[in-house]
Image (tube, rainbow, N blue to C red; front, side, top):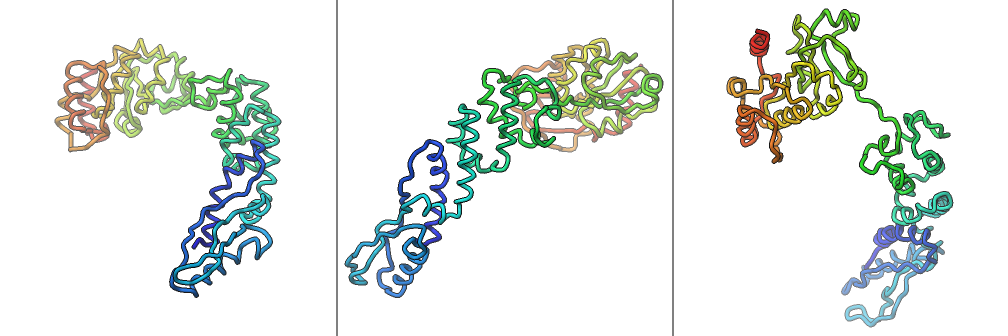
Length: 384
């Protein structure tokens, strides 16, 4: 026989659909709880205890909650007994008081009224997302302020914290997911549909990425940067650099940037932290077209794929220590991430052969596993 705890669990499952019906102005109808009509067949004491428990939280006992409808049934083992045949919540008040949701629903009704009055376009969203309406119960006043501003200024062209909206400084940053859902509906005609980043999608200024590099020429560091040789500057600033640099190494990880290339002196040279597929950010730095470029990545499938990608921007790029001899000397059985790339790559025949070997075996030799003496030896060969 169904217990009060099971009735509550089933009633809670009816709660969100009930909230959606409020938005649609559907009058409340009794909520029926499907129950287990079986009873303990051969034990009257157990049967009586189950009936008493069921009645203890019923409307007949407490004045609110579920109603139990009984039917006199002649049972095989217990004779004539009143057996539950239907359980339901007769009124909205019965339902909400039983769940302890009266105050929550009162606030919910105020919120949905505010949302739909301010933005009728959000009606369908409110019907489909009662759980989210509840989740942001305390924030709807501020959320609607933000939505109203964007509707009136659909291309703010400023940073998020510069938005002149009377909300907490970090409110928009902290509520991007819900705001994006709402603004996708309200600004469907003006948003940048091909952008997923909140700032770009809604015409805000994006936080500009920093690019990290090391100057390997101490004289250039002293002349242009007061002797500082390890810098991180906004990407747009890097793109506009005018330096007497003729050789550039793009390295894939910070360990290599900090140690292996920290050499005493390399004339007219710098090393850039490419950060894997982050090399995409360098494509606008057109001054690199005039430099001798060396890409030094891990000896794994992704390393060669990134090299190919970089060559798409700078075709004259050479690879450094991404060769069969280096792999043969120092490979220790490391495994990489399987590659699913099927497109043709911009690789030399020698690089292509090694790429196919590494990709097939899912091998990996990380940059930091290559000894310093080997790096110096190969750098000297380049210099000569």
